[in-house]
Image (cartoon, rainbow, N blue to C red):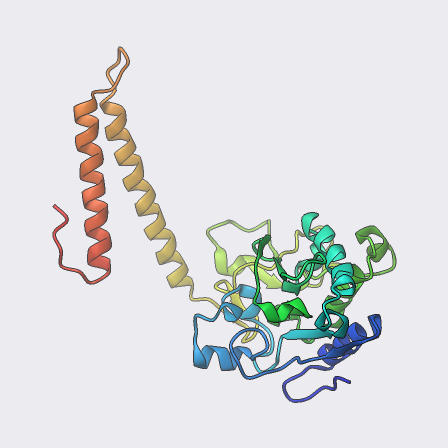
Length: 295
C-alpha cells in the first residue's frame, strides 16, 4: 500500500492505491525514486542534469520540487505473458488519446500496453505522439504527471475516469474538473506588448468570461511567485522585430528581381540566395564561437 512521505504527496499515494484497487493481481511498484525522469524530483533532476526531459515543460517548472511525479503499476498477469488486462486500460487511454481529451492536460505520458502483443507502447500527451518504451513496460504501466499537479487530487481523478472508460461528458456532468486553466489566465483587455501585466492567478469559477490557460513560466514562475524581468521581455521583443525587419528587406530585394513583365532573373536570384546562405552560416558559426569564414 502506498503511503505519503517527504517525497510522495498524499494525493499521489491515494492515486497509486486507487490504481491497485482497479484490478486484482496488480501492485504498486514505485512512485518516488532518485533517478532521471519523473520518478525523481525536480530538484534532483536539475542538480543531476538540467536537460532531463522531466524538467523542461512549463508545467514541470512549477509546483513542489521535492516530490516524485510518476507511478509504476505492475500487472502480474502481464509478467506471465498475458497482456489482456494491461491492454484493456491501454485501449481506453488510446481512445481518449486519439480524441485529444483535455483530461490529459496535467499528465505527461503513459507507457505500457495498448494491445495484446508483447511489445510495449507509449503515449505522449504533450506532443500527442507515440513512441516505443523499453521492455520493462511490457508488464507495468508507467504514468508521468506534470509537477504542477502532483499534489492535486483532481488531476488524478481525470486519469482514473479515463482508465474506468468514463466519457468526458459524463465526467464533467458528475462534477469532474479539468486542469487546463486551473493555474493562470490571460487578461484579454490589456495590450499584447504589456506581457508581464497580462498574467495573473485566477480561479475559473470567479470569472468564467476569461479564457483560462497556463502558458510559459518565462512569464510567471508559479513556484516562486515572481514576475519575469520586463526589460528582458522587451529586449527579446525588440530582437524579434529586428529579425522580422531583415526578412522583409530580403523579400523586397527578391521582389525587385522580378521584372514588371513577369519572370525571374535566375542568375541574380541565385546570387542573392547564395549570399543569404553565406551570411546566415557565418552568423551561426560566430554564435557558436567559430572563427571560420564561410565565404
